[in-house]
Length: 362
Ligand code: NAD
Image 1: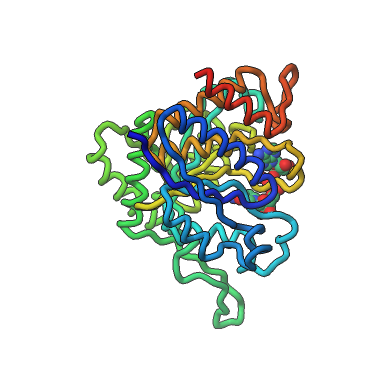
Image 2: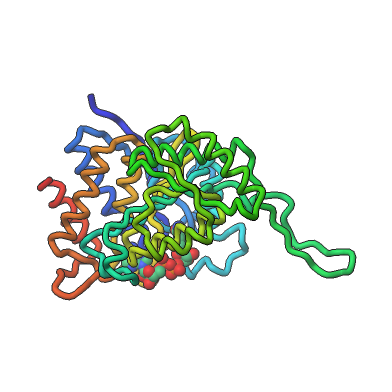
């Protein structure tokens, strides 16, 4: 029986519409091949929404997102909107989307593709074979804990305050995503904290340890965040899945991602307890190359693969899409950002055509 899915597309700004067009073309082919029916509904977000509606996340966009099975986002922002007041900035729309959909888990893979191993700033023998996924808590911790602010002390000096706080249920919720994600991957989970210094981290460690018996097939380890930062650049291959809090995850996921050396290749997923997740490339809207057919669409394609795997629970389709990406790279096709000697330079659109060709060959 044909499976039917409603997907909200948020092409956004800059190179967003170009890479989204490629993703839609590729998803249509996958749908035909695997008997999946995708109903695409496009909505305004970011700068495009500010221009048309006066706000970065119009209510009708959020409603469409809520009434879909998954949200595929490209990129938002650009110089034109950088000087607007904070509540009107494109990024404010992103925060509103996360809050509106209750997205508390951010999944950031950092996988070294054999074809691009030399793009990393680290030595080949260190990064070859690296396949890490960082699960970051997204709606709690020090970014949201109360009290927060800049207060005046009795002596008239100003004091900046943020509070790192997690409840047991918040830790359990993200911990479960960590264990379940590890189950779908290499079955090894490293929980990163600072339990030697922070009480909030001690509770984190206690709860993650308490969850472990429910996942006997996953091997759990713990690591302090300072050591994790060192180990990521010393011997990254030791990691499979990492679960960590908002602040530590923000920093470690960027460090892990950069092991790959190519921003145009990095996807991400943000998931809630139920309802649609948001799937988007890590890179921004690249205004410097927008409208020139130079963008690398592969991070968007890999985000669509994450949507198939984690959002729509269609692992076969996800595998197929990821395989198509490997095939085009094997065939020597590159966009400008990942170009190297002896390879064939393609524009964004032509890369999309190469992907479709690869899908027909799988
Ligand atoms: P950026 O990621 O847009 O670009 C950084 C550099 O990488 C640029 O040289 C760009 O050309 C290149 N690049 C990025 N993606 C590429 C791709 N797919 N193919 C080829 N080259 C690519 O970061 P930035 O320049 O700091 O930010 C530009 C705008 O994007 C800003 O307005 C920023 O706020 C916004 N932004 C949005 C998101 C998002 O939508 N989630 C994330 C980061 C930045």
